[in-house]
Image 1 (cartoon, rainbow over the protein chains, first blue to last red):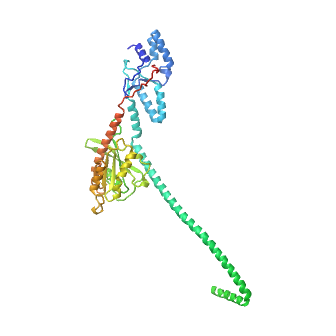
Image 2 (image 1 turned 180 degrees about the vertical axis):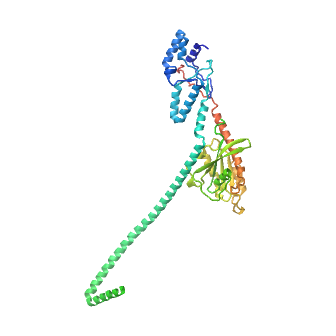
Length: 226
Length: 208
């Protein structure tokens, strides 16, 4: 194949997919646009000028070169790393940006393009990410901790319910006690008032007997104390 | 996708509290039994290398779950990805037998299995070493239940005396492996269709 073929392949890419979903050709990538093939505008300029003057060397300098195996490994590692390190949205974003750096080589080239099975790559990355013993152990530990918390929460809830029940009973008893004590106070006040009235009446009407009786009571009281 | 799960068979043991789920697991994995009852908190798992039909080797991951509601947790996150579900009841406890359907339904609701009608369940009637006078669940009732649940395998076991435990788990491993392979096959089928990357009515697309 000469360089013109390469150029034709470059400029007239087929519009219909000729490969199935499991075989995508990702022949080259360039992290640094300037160092490998330059930016897209420069490439277009180079391609058009090469068409005009037919200088194959210029086409080569701006066209895509097939990747060696190390480059493919680099792509694999980029895809894997980006998938593992980023969330889904970030992954999509990175994939889009990555796709800008990837060019395909059609089968018209002499060197057969290397194939990357992207679904397999993604699937294996996912499999390794979620299917290991560590994950299961973590899940088991999490369930145990969660179970303990659940149990403690229920215990606390029971204790709170019991405490609230007891508090309610005590509140009722307190309210009853307040009413009873108020009645007791009224009764005591009434009794005191009556006694004072009786004492006053007896002290006035029967002063001698009243005082003798009172002394007798006081003496008896002292004797009892002794 | 033979490397998909590294042949890890995830088995979930479900059943009421105190039916002997943990004892069955320890009897099968460690060949040990403890008379002391200790409620399982959350969930735990043990793994064991199993030979299935003398030619297939797999790692069985047996998940023991909490039967007591207060120790259940995380919803049922660990149900996902199960290859087989073991339903255990106590032959001396009618309630545990009656709750088997509930456990099965709960598993199917939360495990998100692709084909609930063909998902493998195994029914175990545990504690058959007890006196006949204490047994309240008849074999006939158990067989009828197994038939009503889709002719699922039924074993009468005793974790205490190791009756039928290995036999039951051999069947469990076989069912789990079959389910695992079915899942892997259906997964591969999902990716066999070519993806059409051509946009419809894309007349103005750039060809460069």
